[in-house]
Structures are given as structure tokens and as C-alpha cells.
Amino acid sequence: MHQQIDLPMYMALQILTALGTFLLMEAWAWFMHKYLLHGPLWFLHKTHHRPQKTWWEWNDLVSLLYGVAAALCIMHGIENQAYTLGIGAGIALYGVVYFIFHDIIIHRRIKIRYRFESSYINRLIRAHKMHHKHLGQNPSEAYGFLYATSKYDVKRTGNS
Image 1 (cartoon, helix red, strand yellow):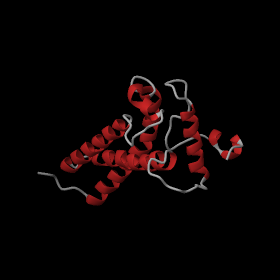
Image 2 (tube, helix red, strand yellow):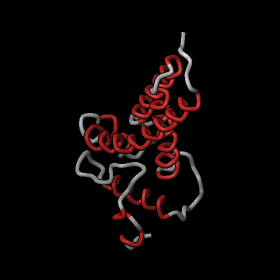
Image 3 (cartoon, rainbow, N blue to C red):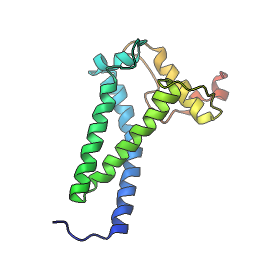
């Protein structure tokens, strides 16, 4: 049996937890990408750095694992009125945004015909292209997904 909760406060804390988790996910994704995916998990991630003949990459297993973790956190949070609901929601939100930016906008795994005018999106695209310029495990650069330094701005690089 669950104890009575202050619903507005509970929801506010869940939303703050979700937003905080979302922000922390970018730091975690950078760390994991640089030190795990380009390290001991390269055997999975290398499929993402090579041309593919199918829609599936072994690297997609990483996203599936995050999806499972998010779902488990959400279910636990709902069952136990715990902060894991917000944590799971933050992980899930990051996953959706990652899919839109990384898989659709940058890699065009779902074909779209659109040229983005946003300097932010173009900076992300340019940073990720520089990351993929290196086909091997090391060296590489620009390990983040939703943040790229001004080094990759059009005005700074002179590229369009």
C-alpha cells in the first residue's frame, strides 16, 4: 500500500529529476562514447563508423540497452513512487532527442530532404562529421551528441 503523497510536489520533483537526468546524460554519453565505445566496446561501435548495407548496426544494441534501463526505471518509479520515474523519463527523453538529432538529422537513417539553417544543428552535424572522419578506434574527436564547441561553427571553420 502506498502512502499519501503531495501530488504537485511529487510531479515537480519528478520533472526536475527528469530534466537533471537529461542534462547528465550528455556528460555520460560523452564519457561512454570516448572511453567505452571507442575502448572495450569498439567491437559493437565500429559498425557505426563503417558504411552499412542494412538498416541495423550492432551499435544499435547500446540504444536498446538504454531503452530497457529507462523502462525499468520508469516501472520501478511508478510502482514505488520513487525518483527512478524521473530518472527513467530523463533517460528516455535523451534517447528520443538523440534519435532525432543523431539518427535522423545527422545520419539521415530516415530519409529527409531538408537543409537546416540553425547554426546549432549545423555545428552538431559538422562536429559529428569530424568524429566520423576517423574510421578507426583512435584517435577521434567530438564525442558528444547534443553539445559541440564553437570550434565547429561555420564562421570559425570557414566551411558551409
